[in-house]
Every structure is written in C-alpha cells, then in structure tokens.
Amino acid sequence: MKNNLITAFVLLLAMVSIVLVSSCASKKNPDELKPIPSEFYGEWQAQDGSRLQIFANGKGAFKIGGKSVEGGTVEYMPKMNSFEISLLGISETFRIDQAPSGNEMKLNGMVFRRVGGFALESPSTTSTPSRTSPASLPSDAELRELSYKSLRNFGNAVVNEDFTLFHALMAPEFQREFSPERLKTVFSQFIEKKVDVGMLIQDAPIAFSAPARLDENGVLKTQGAIASKVAPVDVLFSLDYVFRDGEWKLVGLDIKTQEPQRP
Image (tube, rainbow, N blue to C red; front, side, top):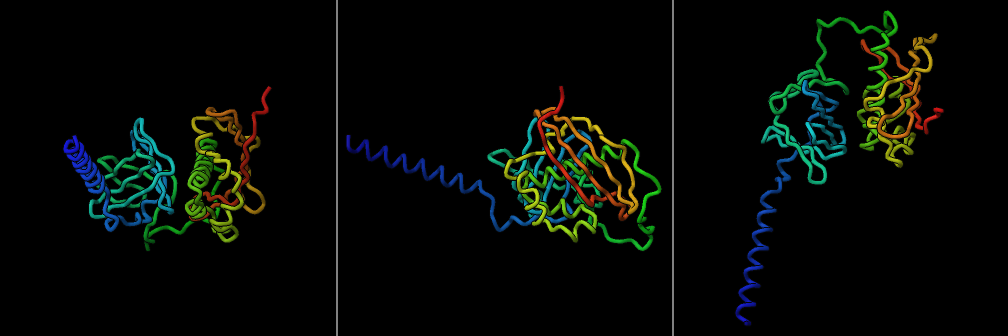
C-alpha cells in the first residue's frame, strides 16, 4: 500500500512538471517583444468590416467576425513580423504582410485603411500648401462623419484611459491649451463611470439641434444628440472645429450623457 502511494505521488509530480514545462514553453520570450511602431497607431478598417485600433499606451482593440476585444494588450514581435492583441484569454494574431504606408497596411492577407488617427508621412517638396480655411461648410454627410469620428475617438480615449492619440488629433490651438493628462482629468467622470461613448452611438443616427455655422473666427460650430440603441441614454454634444492642414480638426468639445427626455 505504501509503495503504491509513493508511486502515485511520483507520477503526480511528473504530471505537474510536464504541465509547468508546457505552460512555460508556450509563453512568449519577453526579449522578443517590442513597443509597436507609431505608424500603426490609429483606427483601421478592412473591406469585410474588420476593425482594428492601436493606441500609444500599448493598448488595442479589434473586431473580426464574431470575435472582439476592447482595451486589450498589444504585443509586437518584430522577429515574427507580427503583433497580437489579447485580453483575458481572447486574442488575435496579425501577420504584417505590408507595414503601414500612409493610411494603408496589409495584415493576414487583408488590406486595412486608416479611418481614424494620423498618418506619419514625410513632407514632400512637390506637395501643395495646406489651406488655412475651407472654401465652404462641409456637407451634411461630411458633418455626420466628422461628428461620429470625433465621438468614437473620444470614446476610445476614455475606454483606454489614455488621451494621447485623441490629443494628437486635435487642432494645435487645443493641444497647446490641454495636455493628454489634463484631458484625462477633465473627463475623469467618464473614466470612473466607464462610459463607452463609441459603443453608445453605434448604429444610432445623429440629430443636429442647430444648423452648422462658421463664427467670426472661422470656427465650425456643431451641436446635436444621439439616442443610443444599446442603452436608455442620449449622448449630447457640441463640437467645434478649425480648418488646419487641409482638414477639419477639433478645437473644442462638450459631451454629456443623460436619460432620454422623450414622451
């Protein structure tokens, strides 16, 4: 009986050793993990609707098919020419077929285009000078896309508790006034309450409460509300833009959430 117990104990130790060796072998080598290059930062989308977000704080998100992750960890493996986004056992590995060039890259055989964020491009001596003011107001469709993009970028900053990328997308005037750390403090209540604005506005139409206009300083003023389809909440916003470097950039914002005020 005693010999049987000893034999069983030895076998158990052997099994534990195998499990430990296997789990250690599956772990990535920390020496092979590097910060992902900044040209990957931003929000990306493929033709099939797959979405990918990479932030400057090492966090990321993806939605591919029925699998998605928000606020995951990005692990860049240059030796394997790939990176992984993972959270609580859910992960996706992206093989880098073509590194970002301007606003396009190729991962896992799919072309992703940047739909939010910024491109790190070298200045060209043949490029035309950037306009400082637009020829006219944006169209209604452009205003809606501009508003959605700003609100999604804000939501991403709150979810990841990092306003670095959001700050980089702002107009220079705003950047000088507000640092990423100050933005985090200003919107601390959103972070504490884990208000995911990007999720709240998903597939919900914008109702502008007043026509967009340009004030005497050339600031584009917009305001409206979005009745969420995923929660009994209205997202109210006032977004101000200035035209810089050939595009409208956010220079001021006021975002609130409230219970629906409908009969």
